[in-house]
Image 1 (cartoon, helix red, strand yellow):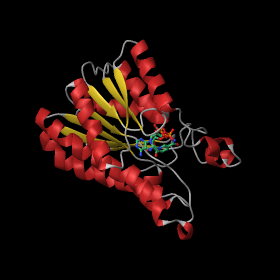
Image 2 (cartoon, helix red, strand yellow):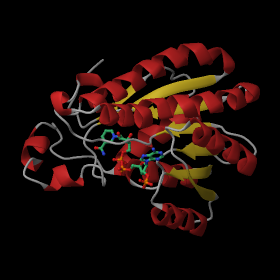
Image 3 (cartoon, helix red, strand yellow):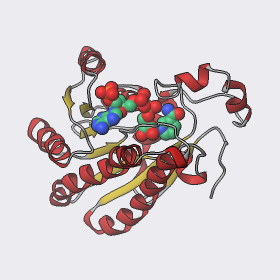
Amino acid sequence: MIDLIGKSALVTGGSRGIGRACCLMLARAGAKVCVNYRVESPSAELLVEEIEGAGGEAFALAADVSRREDAEMLVEETVHRFGGLDILVNNAGIWKGSAVEEMTDAEWDETLAINLRGAFLCIRAAVPVMKEARAGRIVNVSSTAGQRGEAFHSHYAASKGGLISLTKSLAVELAPHGITVNCVAPGWTVTDMTSESLLGPERDGILAAIPMGRAARPEEIAGPVVFLASDLASFVNGEILNVNGGAVLVG
Ligand code: NAP
């Protein structure tokens, strides 16, 4: 039922984990996909090959979303290659741990710059294109940490809470222009980001706090992202879609 044929999509941090699953699912629905990554080009190139092998259209582009010129280049290049930008998925993120009294300025700034400013920079670059088309879908990938906080990851939680407020603000600001802005807030998901925790001694404690008793597969986060990018979600705006196996129940 989801038909994105002819749509142009940009997925930040699209080369691995949740972003990778989003790229694959968007491409399977017919969208042309720009797979952004920061440093690890083999994963991105392999993904492009996989999408093309299945008959889809994609290209990989290295860019650090925390840098204004990189974010602008990402949007410009996607528009140049695909003739527009219909779907922006702000997924790139980092998750590093630190007790607050030991957290350096640089650690705080890096997390906020990638997780929050990166989304702002990409959105700011994309909005003029979407306004001109009088249509657009923006999906921000937050986290349960943005809803309930996360001890020893306070910079991460603050960045993800910021994404939720950014989503709500822009949903209202951009709706008159035909642009919806929504958010997916994933819980524990099996990716490179979490492999150490999910394979280590904390595993049982983590899973015990998830009513479904397991972490998500990346495709289980991508599905809700693609739903929000599709016509099925045409009247959904400013929503924070919780995808956490029941771990954080918020209205
Ligand atoms: P991941 O497996 O670590 O992949 C991160 C992706 O982001 C990679 O493609 C990486 O590119 C890219 N990236 C990192 N910094 C970047 C930058 N400055 N500019 C552009 N791309 C950058 O992460 P994940 O687990 O899939 O997480 C994806 C998103 O979901 C993140 O925002 C994360 O906070 C959120 N999330 C994850 C979980 C979870 O349990 N996994 C839970 C809640 C929310 P390279 O390959 O080049 O490094």
